Length: 359
Image (tube, rainbow, N blue to C red):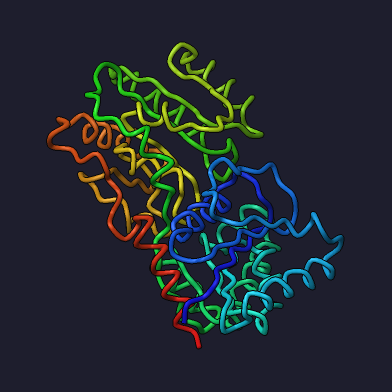
């Protein structure tokens, strides 16, 4: 049955999961009535949101958890209840909130990563318990979407519920103006996009660039992001004598132009799920180097759209393999390196089919 779609997120901020919510909302805006709902105020990214998508911040009208829950339940009920409304939540707090609305709408959780690994890295040993509780609670949702087979297996093992595997995706219309078929030449250019944190391991890239330089390769590095490791990273760059070759750009509202100019995007994170930055790079035709963890092997193919590595000491060699893919002639290398199941329209349509199949 056709349903009005509500997409529930913790806050309206331009972070990875919220960008995913925007991409989903934009893809569905021409097919259904879509409302993006945030539990609290954030920095906002409204310029990227289709004008047909309604926006509601529950914190604008109600104070406290109870008031916001009552307001959201009223919104869902007014949209037709379980027969007429579906609520898709992303992230822990939104999932917990959504779980309390099962009488007012079909509820769906969109799991964005390896929860056990990510929560452990973020919260320590207590994070494993939080992840286990979060995963077990998914059994009470009408439906669940997981971005990879690896995530689906983790969810099933904790909850006993078999999720639908729906690839992560990016807002392709937003990226399209930055696609270039310019032939790249000169020094190999490597880009990192993301926060400078221990989880993402940006220091490994500095060491790998130093290794490649020592082997006689001309290299350049661009770090597009900010975070607590910025000063540490700067010191590492100086220590390796790479100050003239590596740029720390800080946070960029739109990193896509410098990303499109790179030969390779490198993201050596310990755990990522399916990183949006990598999908954005692939859409722009930039091969990616990722750690062989989580479900990365499901969208990175050697000698096709990037390279995978397992040991830290193998990163430099993987970067070089991916760079050689990037320097293939424009006629031989497709502009878009995204596998089909990670394309926006296909994945968004699968979410729509998932929630509308529930009676």
